[in-house]
Image (tube, rainbow, N blue to C red):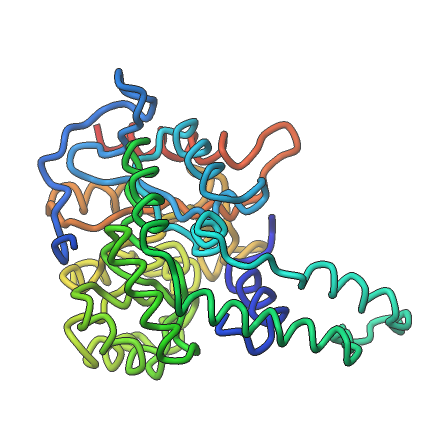
Length: 349
């Protein structure tokens, strides 16, 4: 639970190796009805409070069993009606070939010698047979994506719709994929009714994916970690690539690494922000725990100020909970996300 999403995604891509692995553009949430973060009378959740859509990135549920069915269950329990959907949960529902990587990694690690004290971690070495199995899996995934059954995608969207859940962004992170695989990501995101496909802030990825975003009339959306602490305008050349390049602004990472109020960025880039990740953090100069995730209300992030600013300005920005603080043994990710939803609800109502 203490591992960042960057580490989580990095390990996934490292393990896979060389694997390639008709909504309006930006409809406003303003004016939507406000209801408690509990199932409505029709059994569907509604987490829009005074026009502000409080959602979550489904990475928040990473400590629990995955899959789209479980995502729906968790969202209904937490009172969440909109998500940034991690692609692994969606693709499992769509029938992607089963990955052998967990088994292969476990087998390879068994044959590794015990590391010396304080020695850097070594990557396992695969046997020719294991590498051949990995290569076949990568090829199978590429072929499966190339020939995706769009009826299954339509069924996935209907499944979310029937449960009152919108996937406003799909986290494919396709910036280093081949063109036909990138096309797949944007085609599927479009069919899911998403505003776009998210990835990590990267100029070359933006240049590569922007034509596909333009083709499908949606966005390629870029998420930050600590980059703004080193370069306050790092997103400008990325946004300049195309009007279809947008931001998934992580307000928590911004505050934790810079100590500056995220409203500074929201005010400047509000028309280029599709969604935000919200969390509570300590600032960069906090002693002894700088830039640390905290239970909501126990950190220094100006959560109330940020959420109320979105409300007052009526910006159509999705505000997604990213659960990164430690979850205690007597709780779980769903309960904590629900607590965050209710925290935001109390601010906004």
